[in-house]
Length: 609
Image (cartoon, rainbow, N blue to C red; front, side):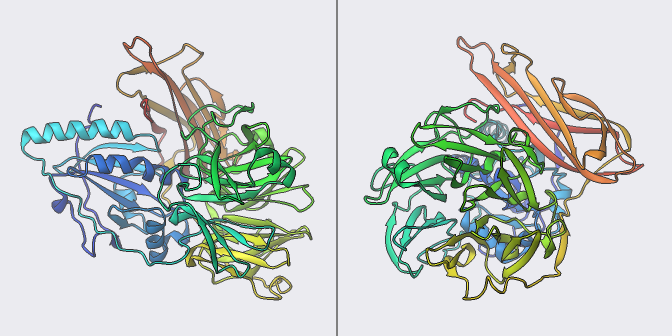
């Protein structure tokens, strides 16, 4: 990898440090080490993917590499110091984290997307920046090169990373994600941070049994392993009899679906290769065990199959337990909010699913757009929500109401829907075009369960428990919250009205070249929200350079850019093929003194990515 011209790194400053034992770290203290800054926000699935990609790298280069997470929040809730500390524990972050609630470091290091990775050399200079995920192998080569150069210069200092991870409290559940009401009155809970499933008694507290060793992994059998398990779907009895298991589990970080037999506690892998999806979109049926998935977050039975909220690529998928096939159900992988026929819709990290009792609708918590959406008759519609950067806690008419990163939904027999409004700490109700608050003061509610007796049980993830809503709560759900509206404060890119050159700079991974064996090697798709922002330049082409024309009448919006490039190995007897894909949601402000060029960098992925 060629190193960029060196720029002196800005000093690290923020509200507080986590995982350092109370110490503040400075660049002077880090001198002699390679430093990797990970600009992240804990709502972002791509940031969570990068956390997992970095773990082997951090272990491999523990004596020369210091990884620092710079938490630059999107949502208002993510600015809360306690919420950040909980997220650091929830996702197993054991490197130092700098709390950057006002995005000061984000701006000084010119980050433009979550996640962004910035590498500092042992002398404190910025030598590389990259956006998105899939850079682990390239980072490894860069670290190797920095070690070689600075060991020769005498500027490398070996030693362990300055981190001190606090010991979490011991609780029966730890950040549970989803739950399921079992036929006998018990509850099955995805005990996500404990890497296991738990069966609770009908009192939603007493532990009946734990399924799983508690270790991260993907082992099947009666002593199974999971990696942050999430959604749970009880199969219809006739389907379960043929399939040979009762419950489908979304094993999120393993990129798998697992099947659980309730009688024996045996777990088997039923869908997913274990590789993260990085392909092209098709709507064909595939062998369920051969297909790549990406962070399945929830599962529900609808339309005669298991529907999967594929949060990692902003789609819904389907899985047939009898035919053992799987495929795309809805979405293009573009992260935004757009309704319409299922193959054409845009979603943003769908994280919760619930089928209406009559089966006529599938309800969706589309978390990153702070939206509640529904599927019916082959189309998707939005009930509440306005887009990626508008959120808050506002009741009233659905077209004006606001949520904040909801993770769960529960469809009720009366046609209404309850929403686990996670970052507002509330349960909301959508009914007859109105939104109301049912309960608040909860700690990151992530799911809702209806018992056979008609009680509503909330998975209060941040409080590590299941809690029942009080009697009469639903009847009193007409409470109206005037509320507060928010927009994400990520600094926009200033662009001039009229003609703007969009320039996608593609850098193939070392040892690779563009490959046109199967058609054009590159593809660029551009759209805007609102659509009126873009007068010219929307659509798909094979050229990575595009002339856009921005409206002078629309002063703010988001440019949605999706680029991909096909490459193959150079000078290999049997060259492997690779596909690099990245999408950006670039908030822009149209102003007379704005730039007339928007450069974005697409870095090639390696064979191991």
